[in-house]
Image (tube, rainbow, N blue to C red):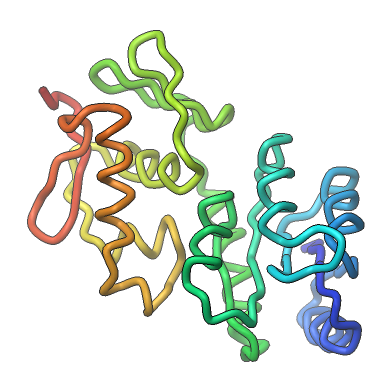
Length: 221
């Protein structure tokens, strides 16, 4: 597996690279946001490990930029910040997971394997129900003939529910699939807030509230 590590702390970067290579991963490195973005756009990686606080261009801006250019490979953000808003902003720009510094190297490898596995278990590229069309390749949602602009995590949430059409999905399943295994989000209102945003844009009937979670119904009215 070939991964890109974008981390400006040279010693930490060296330590992470050494450990990942011991696990038979091929690791490229970059030490600032601009260099990292250039490599992401020019090379093929199965996973990108992206520090949130980088010189020249921070991780959030890099993530947003490469997602807008069609890069779909999973991105894990590294952060030393305790500001949950900064972390959520990174996730909403298209990151698949995050891990706080300091972290256990085995946990990082587990997160890499998890996001890569999820990316390979991709759903059918186009899902339709009622007057909603979800195009996973284009990361686009239409209501009727109108394109509706959803934030990356709003799209991922709606896509997850649509892939599991007519199944009640509880909050823990939604968080694990859309945000990753984040204990601090398990008792937050993150899922409910994103569902509210989606309903505001697509209509209240699109996502149904069920005990403990949400679902999308194929015959929802």
